[in-house]
Image (tube, chains in turn cyan, green):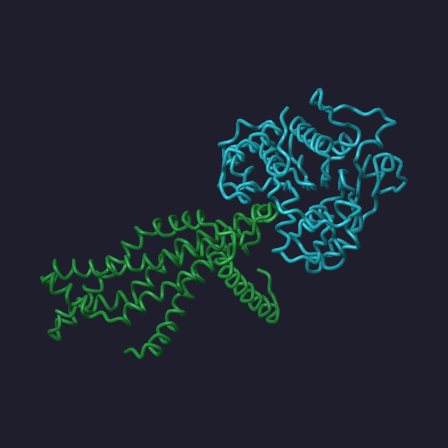
Length: 282
Length: 260
């Protein structure tokens, strides 16, 4: 299966700063009027790792993604993304940094007045000004990656929910960003489509070694990602032997009442003695 | 309906004015900052300018016609029916052309901008645009502002001409006046100050239409109901602001141009 081209050199690089992790949240607080959503959230996302973010509805999972992108501003605390402290950056300075991030929104957020081709090419057209043969080739490759090459000239309204989600993934990965943020990419989808999307996320993680933060309610998706690796020879997921789960770059983070109550790998999660966590994963 | 305290109400209003001012200043500044979205400007010019042409032509024509019809009786009483061309031309060029054209364009385009941008807000398309590294203020607001100001200027000129044509039709068909005399009268009555006033106003009104439409769109909240509310508010606010601004701009220009 063909894969998208590497990122364009013309994209502005983020500041070269020594950073231990792709993303660092340090004691972050955020309130919406009287409602305190995040209360001292701290965690790190190492380079090349995928972290699954769990929590009940309204616990601030999607808010964390928007804070990481700088779409929302934290009340206090520090957020560092790819070595840049987004909490101290102006909106105008955030745009070059965002070129190195990819985001898949919960409802896909495709531009409904643009075709699939224009949606996927959006970032490249913004960079180069025109839609040329090189961009067309990269759009086709990105859509081939999500197996939707035949939808090039369709509008988002003509696609199913699962197809829209896959187009959103193609739009996010077309420049091969260093950090990907997924907001419930499998929510509300049938099991077959969900499995296809999980397979794409694992492929992205294992083939391109991208760091990613995955918000999800579906434990089974995250466990599949933690126990499988992508096999490029068979183009399928391969289950890892039980003793090799730690080789998979995957971790879990659970939020409760605006605080992180668990941050660890699948082994630590399975053996947690916290009653809330045990109930959550049961 | 939720009741709020007078202090909170005042705070919200002041905040709205502050946000509107910020959006207006930013959108003007973005017209001079790279990247320039020329293709988007052309597309918006087509939607706003060419799209509004039929209603502007109809409004201008029938306003000129009804103006001639309404004033003919009074002018006839004073034996000045030949001045009808002068009356129609000065009224259309100085006042009715710019104001009525702007009100029609506001009804069509302020609502269109508010609903389009509002829908993009509630479906997270604006957030997606920001996440993809594109500034929506540059990509969406600045081209709409440039296109509205530019096209309203020309729409007003067209409206003035078809208004004069409407007056001519009434003068010729119903008042049996000479067409050449009507045109000469209408043309010679106009002085520089009339034309200047008539062409300065659409610049202000175009700015109001675009910034109000974009402001209500970009601040829409509360799903489809919120988008509907934003659309209505945009038309009302733009129309009222055009009429209020018209008074102050007229007063200012009369003072500046030493004009009566």
